[in-house]
Length: 163
Image (tube, rainbow, N blue to C red; front, top):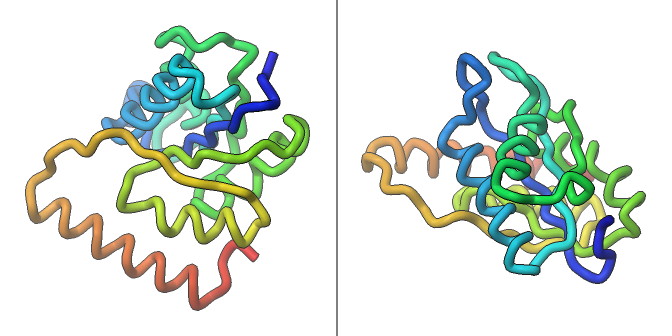
């Protein structure tokens, strides 16, 4: 049973590696959502993400990690089709409606949060973001991620993505 008085975590997907193994980013997001649930900060978790290069769907992997971390099955809801941030939000709207339009906590990486919030707010969601502690990355990789995200944010903002 979902506690309608508390926000719902919407865990945005990330890569699944060969053999159905969660990428480090996907694992961090799922376990952070589980921690939020155990702490009573959220009442339910929506796992969002479709199947990428490797199966199963990101949503299934997120839900499996959350369940293994002790999240009650009835608190887990799956959206297994999204392949973009915009789709994560848009395809999760029916689930959020079924849950009574609770406030949303987007669970993603810190560098991705501004774009995810832009899309969520354009979709009419009352949302905030939360993220797991950062894992040290080689400076070149960290710079690459931030530059890619800055370009994606600009594209979403200018193209009106999420409207």
